[in-house]
Each structure stands twice: as C-alpha cells, then as structure tokens.
Image 1 (spheres, rainbow, N blue to C red):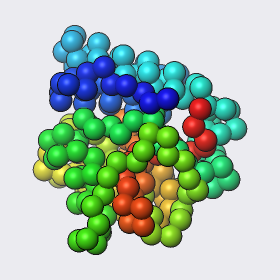
Image 2 (tube, rainbow, N blue to C red):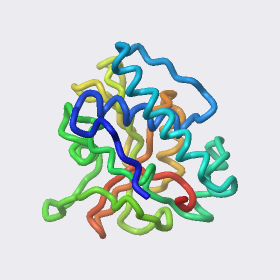
Image 3 (cartoon, rainbow, N blue to C red):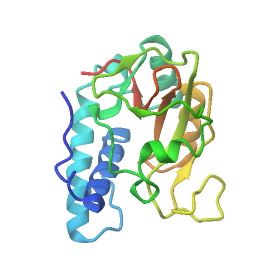
Image 4 (cartoon, rainbow, N blue to C red):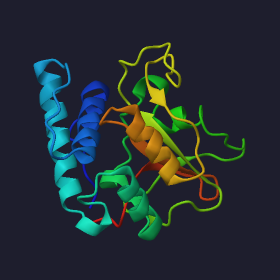
Length: 199
C-alpha cells in the first residue's frame, strides 16, 4: 500500500514531510529535531512517524531492524530491494526539479532514455546490469564548498555500480535523511530503495 504524503499539494511542507519520512525510516529509534518553524516541524514529525511505522512493519531479517551498513548490504544482496516507503518522493529536491532531475546530474543517462519514478510496489534484485546507485541528501544546509554539494545545497554521492557502495557513501555522509536511489537505464526508472521485501 502506498504511503501518502498529506502535504503533497504544498511543495515546501511536502518536502519537509518527506525529509521526516526518510529520517524516521533510517533511524526509527531516534527523535530528530531539525531547526524548522513550528508548522514545518509538525510536518517533519508527521513524516518521521510515518517513516518509523513503515520501517517497523518490515520483517527483522529483511531490513526491519538491521541498521549496520554491512547488515543492510547483505539483506540487499540476499533478499533484494524495494521502493522505499512505497512512494515516489516527488517533493524532495524541488529546487532542482525533483529527484530524477538531481539524479541525471550525477548518473550518465543516454539521451534517448526518459527516466520515470519507480512504481510504489516495485521489488527486485540488487546490482543488476544497467543499474547504478547514488546516495542523495535532501537537506539544503550543506556547505557549498563541500564535495558533492549542488548549487541548491543538496548533497549527492558518486554514481556507484552496487547498492552497498552507495549505502556506504550514504551512511558516511551522516545525515539521517540521506537515501540511496536506484537508477535503471534498462527499465528507465529511478527511485529511492531499501533492502528487503516490502511489507
């Protein structure tokens, strides 16, 4: 079942809700307190709660309670990946035109390929031919001089051939909102993914 962003009609609040979802899903046992106004903090916390709920529904051996980089990479290798949160994260990276617009600044995509979002119920094996993975952080408070930071303040890792490599970059980045995006030239899709089968 798709997770619905209740603020999908508002680009700013919708973005903040999606950041909260990523933080809650990434670190479900941590209370995150970003420096937002009270209204935006409420949206962030609603997203964080939805992300926690989504993560806690996953079976423990399939990405539900695993938090280590090595453990998550093993789950991805053994069980596969699924679309994170069953949603497209359409509000994230709004200043640059969305998730796909940001990804194509990092990943080399042939000119005749038009990427589209992953279907909410997508599941598949990790590290397939014609796939690349990239770590992305939707926060805009990165120092512009930092390697991988766009002019809009977002952070991107390098295009990686494996989920484990991108996960390593994501966890090394240090922000709980950082996620790994799968890009497939073969099926022309792009979206945030998480190890294991969906719930």
